[in-house]
Amino acid sequence: MTLLAMLVALGVVISPILRVEGMCPMAHFINIVCSVLLGPWYSLLCAVLIGILRMAFMGIPPLALTGAVFGAFLSGVLYRISKGRMIYAVVGEVIGTGIIGAIVSYPVMAGLMGRTGLSWLFYVPSFICGTLIGGSVAFLFLKYLNQAKLLAKMQASLGAPVTEQPENSAADSIGIAVLGILVFLAVYVVMKNFLHMTGELTIGIPAAAFLLVELVAAVYFHVARDGHHKGKEARE
Image 1 (cartoon, helix red, strand yellow):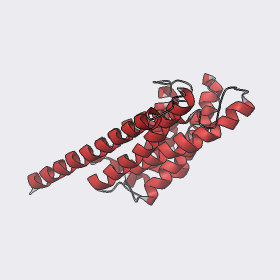
Image 2 (image 1 turned 180 degrees about the horizontal axis):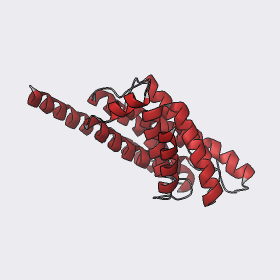
Image 3 (image 1 turned 180 degrees about the vertical axis):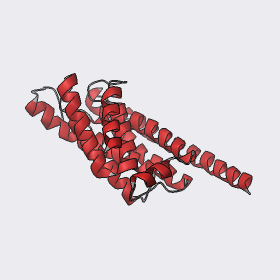
């Protein structure tokens, strides 16, 4: 409960960083960290409390809730299903917020807030962009804790039912590759719905973005694998 309170307070304080309407990267950072340390239910509660405080004291619209709660819960669920692979906590956050939360936000903002000019996919690009930024920061932060042998200790002290597994470059690379599909979707929506582009570029540019993410996944796999082999040789 103490850690949950600290994460809620931290989430409220850092939420204005890089924030624009429809994109709050640091909220996703907190979601993923809470999911890995405390699990899906605490992460959901954390997102709800942060959202309510931001709406009450910062004048943030209901996006503070719709853009956080689904990703927070799914992040913790996928982390447990994968038996402790933090990349899947990131994937859960991106899918939960970038797809589910973005779609749910449309009727909330159009119906309750009276916003006009919106569509079902209006928030998808900004939500996915925000989750990718916040998810990347959380991934690097948790990786550092794991390499420093601190993450597993923190999880054990908190009684977490699932603890971070040893480094696995293949599992992490697959998770990064899955994110490429979501990047493709976000870029495609921007090309089609916002820039109103037609022709080959409508598919070509999203495909290029997808291939870039797949390239990042391949490079990560080789770099992480080489680092693992060198570390093993050094220990021997």
